[in-house]
Length: 563
Image (cartoon, rainbow, N blue to C red; front, side):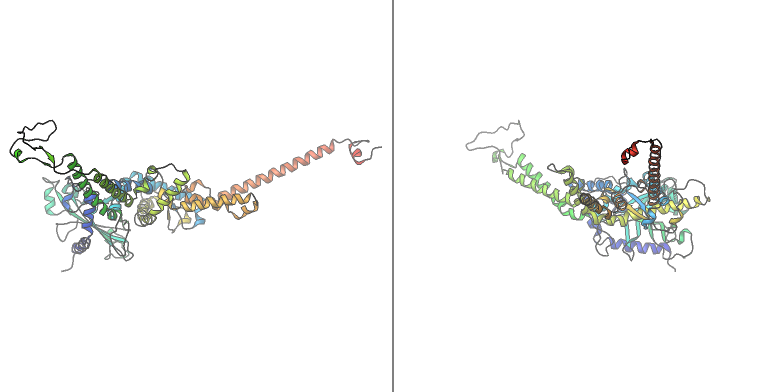
């Protein structure tokens, strides 16, 4: 019997599940238990389960640190309050062409508006948080009828990924739950199994186990353009449904999922993040908090010893109570069995603070909150320099996030906007296109993304400082020898400086516009010079015409010819 598509998917799903179970899941459970208990889906029954999961946390410093990293990455990389990327071309000369600059600016603004209208800025904090804690995060950008694109985060434990030969994620399997009513809305009643169909009338809110596979479509027929022959296939199926049936089979031209890894070792599929560094100190912190609580309690309510005569009598050590006893010689009443040394409490508090500091360092809290935590007043220059140095520590992480999250995110969104716009440019479909028609100069050319976020600019800060120092040094030299300024290309300097600090490209005029302005200025100056020369000639002629040539006169007097 030929193997069905469902059998192929089940086989690979089990293989990916077995591979992930080799140590990754146990580590992730530890990270979730001690840092972010509400994160993760370790079994399908976790869906909509509101039970407490924070029983292992006494000191929540790691949770606060993880949330500081999440917020810092969000505001520093993809802040919704400021533009964090620009589009450009690989050809620098083409970037100076006015229509190209305007079109690229319009496209980037359209994409920013689309991101703001969609749920992207609700999803990204979750991605940054899970990436920092577990070292891996995952989300998908799916077509949407209302917003054009919709983003779906996949929490840790609910998905399985695999790499291509280039060590890029090209496969995502995930298992989740949907109600019978939701399944009928998304897939249609006819696609459901007989069992689920029977639940729609009386048990419509019953949870059903569903699997979703996104992977390269190795069985596709090249040249076919239907959904089942796309480069990537997407298949939904009931986990316990009919063996020869799937809920939906479709495809994508490009991989719709993004799975950023914080740090990757060799050919590993899953990454490691700051959470793996901080987990030891986090566990130790909980133990020290327990010991500190025991020490405090022993100091406030120490274990007591009492004479044997009080064994069966009513006795109390509650403040204000009285215990009546027959006075006996040498009787001392209640006596503490031990006395807690307060010095130990100071010592353990110091150890707790040290562990908290190491956790904050692991999650880069000292980076994001550095200025506010400075213990002495410093100059603005010193603060700026220290900030740049701190942010450069995130350089490798930012490069991987660009490669595995932001670049695919922008490429995927641009592709969906292009698919929506192309038939509307041609007049085949009604409605407004999401993108303006591109100039003919960009035909067949790949675009390049330039990131202008706070953290991206910090990576370029050293280049900005070098430009400022070079220009300042050239200005000092010009005081002694003005010809040294001939060495400095002011136009190129300004272009490089603006690009490094993330100035919108439309703020600077293109080279052809500058050439036109300078030509007009030169022509105006030439005309003005001609006018001034003509005016001087006219004034000279007028002076000569009014000169008295009778004898004696001024001319003869000057010439020494007076008679």
